[in-house]
Length: 430
Ligand code: DI6
Ligand code: FE
Image (cartoon, rainbow, N blue to C red; front, side):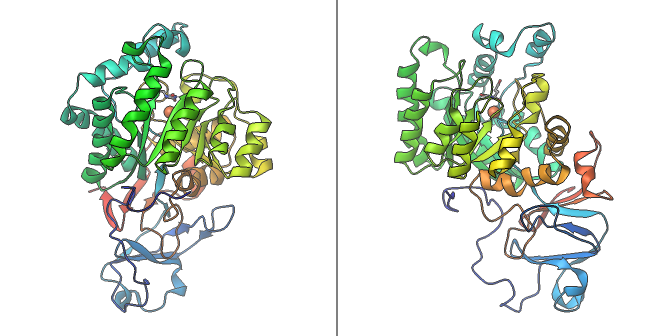
């Protein structure tokens, strides 16, 4: 399932180009020489090319290969030739974030350190509902002001595409405000943004004990928001403290009626069969999946559903139950890695750090984790035009100040991103 270019704002800066990159005879806009490339072309490994060259024009890559294979002299090929070192990878794709929110939950973090569980806090009206209260008190500009620095931080550490969910408004205006802010972030930073409608995230106070009536509302808001061009995909929180599989199914049916792809917060705290439900709907991804059963994994494999691993939430909640990693590998389920950036369970502002956590906690190899944060993450968003370095794909890439790509899964913190380009435009450092 693919999100069409019209429906998605995922391609914020790159103008659509139908020309074949080399048929025009026009010079390329840029050419980088000297760095090694992590192309991620091919089914596994880094696809590395030492002493590489990367060219682009009109927002798309025109060349990604060895310097010696260039089809001419650098000065004649491109308007702007840069010689550098380090490693260039595809831009990181953060395929699961809740980065539009108001306030923070540092106080809740303290309560958890004292022994309260995430579920206890949620059931006592804290958790997600406290962020809902903070968000409802913010107008659109204020929400943008608070959210933009988080998006900026993610981009400064290599993210060139962000998925951003609603889910803290839980009423029509609040959900709309969040999605509008997500789109504005895309325009403001020139970053690719895919929006996801997650009104079925928690039950708002005004619908206490009336979850089915709330789902009726969620289903009614969806076509209105979609008509405004605000929705690229639909998600739900299928969990004991969220919504039942039957309620989730109703939301998915509403998405299907609009031809919108689905994804799910599935099997995070318990196994409610969420992964199999996404598979039944031919969805893009099942996310979290710590408690997914072998049967769920098989269903995902058969339907081509991506497993989105969220090691930030696992880490912060001090979870111990690992996702079924061996089964994902055995059945050929593609694994993505994302930040889940949110104020409750994953205040994580770097996808590179997410790669580190995926290696440390889930024992992904650094190349698996990097694939998870690029090519597989793009797939989890239905985007086939990014996530690798290959002629014809978007010119979204990062130059890292490292000696080997395994360093991306190794360092905790630090300043490694020497340059970030989105659609051929350098966005960081500016
Ligand atoms: N699972 C998550 O990881 C986020 N939402 C969800 O359903 C957490 C959201 C929050 O606690 O604010
Ligand atoms: Fe989440």
